[in-house]
Length: 316
Image (tube, rainbow, N blue to C red; front, top):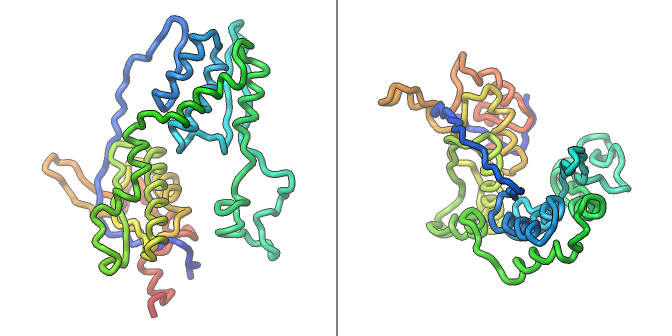
């Protein structure tokens, strides 16, 4: 008998094959240098640093701090990373400032007294013990000391980020959506007395697996927050993915939903042949590319299917 865990999976035979198209384009080139980041405001900070005589390392440090303001989802003052550097003379080096375990951590820190893995609070994914010691600021400090131009001080490189935080800046649509996610979700909320289960629909369409994981993880986090506040049951009420990837169920889907406490997920129907002659499906059929991976997904300890619910007698 399968052990009951956090996720109930109700799969309805429904879905669409989405082919991700890759469009090639010419790379951007510059004569003297360029700055690229996930946010234009932060990138301009780096450009200004180089115009003031700073080198690429100076610019990278300033951009890193600016991103902590303009792109808070990944501006990682509380995290870590790597810096790869190519010097003027052609030499290359790298700085590893990834998060580290605290000094007091030990081999069995995430095991209980019986040697079993701790789940939830106190485990490796939830709570204060799940976080590593941040390395970003220390990494930036080391980079400036060893490879900076020497023309700009630490304070001068941090100042643009301070000004952005103090004076404000024009946010991107993506950041605005994330800040108003809860409010937008509840715009058509009929009221607590009418609702028992809250959920959302999500389809991968043409996005990459990595973006789909990030999107579904973000949306489920918002959903769980609202569900907790309103004492409702959270669920992924409809989904569809990129089933051209043979390991999509265990390599993508479970990574997006596996750490969330949702009552069920529902796969949309397989529509059959469309007017264009293509076959739409969102769950595998016998002989399909993801059939074997779906079986692995089914057998995971984190999943519980409709047939398992009857065996467990959850509703009796």
